[in-house]
Image (cartoon, rainbow, N blue to C red; front, side, top):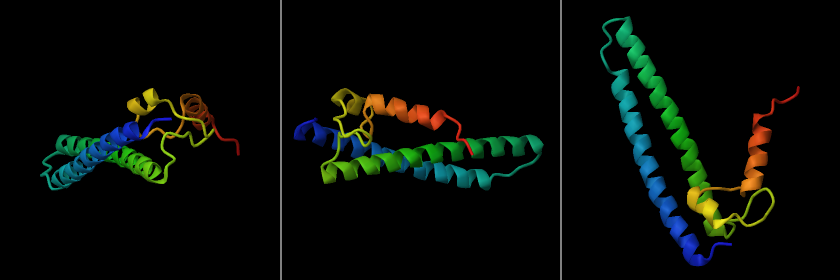
Length: 123
């Protein structure tokens, strides 16, 4: 399990990343507003604005999802469960946490989680 110093280092990284993402989200929202107010003269302009708006929306959605994961990791630090796999309750390796500070699963459980996510659901 990561020691207090390592957890504090991860917390700093998470807080810095959170601040960056919040700034990116705000900038993306401003870009979307600018695109909405952009003058469209023909179908090519419309297609370009639509494509740019769609791309900007996808980026915002991905960043919002990462922001939620970061906030969840910060909560786990506060409640003392940071670095513990939510699936098997084993310690998440420090290497994995350094690569993905908001990881909530150890590597084997993440692989299982991804496999289950990809399988089609039977109705």
